[in-house]
Length: 249
Image (cartoon, rainbow, N blue to C red):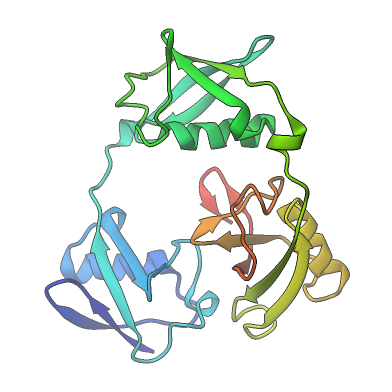
């Protein structure tokens, strides 16, 4: 099918196949127009097209669809670094990006340790990292830096609100059930894994590996819907596949 690639200043047409991946389309654009793949961001109606998925996973892309092309700076290869996370009785190393924020570091610690983000207070070189929006680089954190984690006392009546019921919509990709829309009710304390097992047990989805996306962010199996910020009436997108350190599989 033929789609329109639109930038801020011009537009051009490109032929894409139903099973062609997003990254393959980016390579075509690079070959024709010299725009590096790493700097391309393709979106349709504000929804970013992920490199590891193909056009069958995006039923919104049809003949004549406008795909917006924007650009991001190509990051240098040395942005990754190892730092040490230290709790009172244990510590471990973690790989982060220099452009990660304090908030995203807390999220990574939460995924590894299951420690509630609201309980964490992070310190570096004796100074509290109290501005979640600042990047690690801006905070002076470098390779092999040590971040100390202090935990605030847990007041369950205040910090752990009771679970509440959410009405959700699960939207499958075109390669699953012909892009079905599935209404569900779940507790916000349920994990993504619970959601996956519910869909499989009801035979809505066949037994396989799946990834879920909420507000253009990949969801983590072990984290709750509440942790992901899922609200009543939100839509979750499900695709076949898994996520590894290198990307989609």
